Image: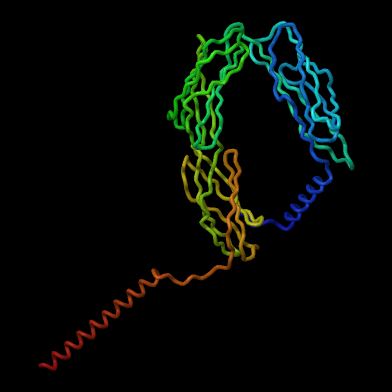
Amino acid sequence: MIKQGNHPNEAKLQILVVLLLMLLIVCAPPATGLGVSPGRKTVDFVPNSSIEIELEVINPDPEAAEVILSADGEIKDMIFLEETELYLQSGNFRTPFKVLFNFPSEMAPGLHSGRIMITPRLALGQEGALSAFISPVIILNVRVPYPSKYADVSLYVVSVDEGTPVPVYVQFDNIGSENIMSAGAAIDIFGPKGDRLASLSAGSANIDKGAFMKLQASPSPILKRGDYTANISAHYDDHNENFTSNFSIGEPLIRVRELKTRNLVYGQINRVLFTVRNEWNKELSAKGFIDINGHQSEMPSFSLKADEEKEVTGFLDTTGLPNGEYNLTITLAYASQIKSNKYAVIISDKVVTPPSTSSSTPLIFIGAVLLVLIIVVVVVLFVKKKSKELE
């Protein structure tokens, strides 16, 4: 669909909205970015016991503040707060508070989670403006050991720049009641078409009960930007575990390679040609728009296979845009990305180009043929005349 430009009333409404937002920004007090320390805490389960831990709320703002503390999640009924309201004094960067765990006689083996919600008490400022805060959360885990050897095994892949060796780790969280004497894993990495790209191995290592260990696999593969699948065959002592994990390297990318249309004609709908390339290892579908000074035009959606490059056509109405130099913006939305590219273009009146040499070639050829015919006729008449004179 081609938009013919903003209606005057729409433009006035947009200006009004911008002015209102600016007024709110000026009138509202600055936002307070509260923090916590630590962001995650794990404790071990002990039947019929209590454990007390200390956590902190971080207030980087010099102004005082007040927050409300509350427990939530699966284990909220066994979490008790020494105080549910916390006053953050002016100039105190860290304010501690205590959390008490009251454990029952038994819990199911595994990792059980809850969280502490730190909710700022919103206070009315001058003329009713609300103070803005960011509400942090602290994750609390209770680890209940299994009665024998047991490890929670997972894959961790570090997303790096394309062309850089990729660090791959197999993580073992020993939540059993015994030490693990030998742990390791074999990893096969596959592309989106099911082709095997790399085979790695990690270990062997011993892991004490209650310990968490990351084993780096080798060799580190070099992978292009894209989505991948890993098949993991892990083992610890006499236990074997096979599972599949998906991971990505980088982010999906459709790169605008070249804007081919640099000169636009004033007062008409112009075709805008540009080339794009899919630098992801899977097909991507995209849509977007072209913009000059608020004159927007949606472009037809298109798809690109992995590593495919092709030409895309958009349209832009230059009515209302005086002749001159402009920045043309191409914005594409695909996967989870929104990317924009700017290019310098020129809008001018339509220029009548003289006929090219190729278009005048037929006329020259016809003229040459007629000239040859005339010469032939003259020669024939001259020969006939001379023959009569000889008789």
